[in-house]
Length: 142
Ligand SMILES: [Zn+2]
Ligand SMILES: [Zn+2]
Image (tube, rainbow, N blue to C red; front, side, top):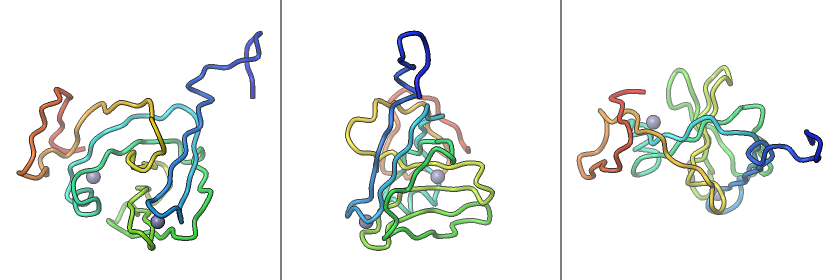
């Protein structure tokens, strides 16, 4: 897909990022402009990751799961499921029931992401063993 007189479109729109779980039994790719990258300190993210999670919202239609041999979904709440690798235990995805919102956990993206955290959410649930001193906005909930 190309646009413009020189045959090139905006780099951000054509960037394809890939990622995987630790063992490689789950792999994915997505392109397009990601919505936002937040650090989530909710209890669920803390439990599933062992710390807190960097969640990147992407267009659900833009995510291509290229390997799903290890992929399983855990119903973590009434409104969403979490995708993880049942071989190595990596947490990779959060998905709303109606598929309207999909988050990819940024730590599973391959190589440099070129992305930047924009805020911390659910800081009301954060652990008491770390401080947040990066100057980013902090929201008590989502
Ligand atoms: Zn795995
Ligand atoms: Zn969370």
